[in-house]
Length: 276
Length: 276
Image (cartoon, each protein chain N blue to C red):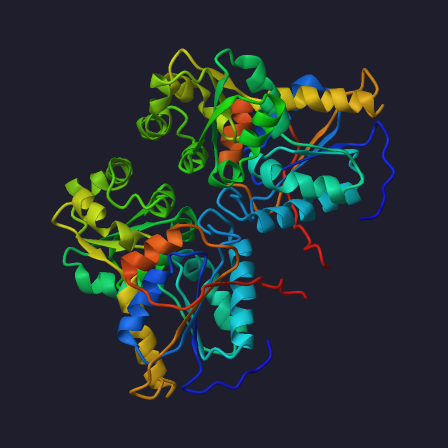
């Protein structure tokens, strides 16, 4: 990958398999209002959650290479599945720093648990990768982790069924068993899940604290920019640029309203394959 | 696209966005046991049901071009979404005949309805395309069509929840209103839905006949092969070759068991972009 020259005024690139990563953009806007953010959601190939490591690595690298080639000073992988499976490869091949959502989520979970038993909800690919469990155990040996793949939640969120009996029924099936155990922190290990925070809190019960990695990811990004001397000058007003690989459907409007995101015209752009 | 020489012994190419199209393969095997079938499921980019016409056309053309380049005598689009949105373009650019699942489904629905009121269930893209409604009205002017986009059904089927309270609750929401109307034929306008036939029949009630386009598609393919003198010689035993663009997950096993499909090793192969 060709080296690029970046400055503190260069944009932060944020990518996701689709639209869910806007929860991370929202947290970044609050934490870092002076930064320009360029977001690319891979709606032409969404979802990543049921796909293989090789495919997710390839898609992540194609998108990150495009955004770094356009001058991004940092890449934020705002997708748990791509963070779990694609991030190691991105750190190998990219010339700019890369942050994901798993490490910040792990940090927040460790700060939240008292019992030392953490539950993690995610897509099949994220849970199957073991990324959260490994990172939690590496950071605090002896910690207990209950991992739950919840493949129906993304479709329910994408239908906008944040408060709905169908969503409650699916959540009940996934998390009801946690009520009889001693897990006291629940990592929402998919960027879609914070939109279900209300329903999830009801299903999990009052003894469990929900952990949203988006806010922690934004703090990690801020810290890293400071370490590298790459934070945008203070007083600057950052811009937000949203693009997708396919025309986004209604869900984009639902999410932008839910998050209060202000952005200009939304663009659709292709991602060239790596070998070209 | 380069011209290819095909014979009656050339294979039939069947493609789908993923695994659901195996319901069509199963019907083709029963109807045409002497034909070699080469199946390619685009699991690296599944699902198509929420994507745009442009993206679906591009994916369909990439896959069909690959299979025709390898000598297929006919292309069967075993995916309602790709049939609804990609088929016109494929018929323009391919050098071999192309059959889809919409026209056979329409034919079967017209044979089934007495009241002249047909309900169609499908993905957002299929329903949004209006392909079923237009084809029904073109074939029988004055027919009434109730079209229902059911985006949660594919994820429920892919979880293997064929008989499950969650599936019943989702189906109830989609089709309960039909019980008070006079629709008497219900087109299962997605290749996944025949796996829900039992639950769907309960939800729709006894006055509604379910229409499965897979069996009718197989009969249409047989008729077309005869017209073109391309049917495999009688007495021949056809082979079945299954491949996917990404490692298929457990759902493949579920479907193969449900359909009783015998096939050799399942392969994973990439689909080159068109411009290469």
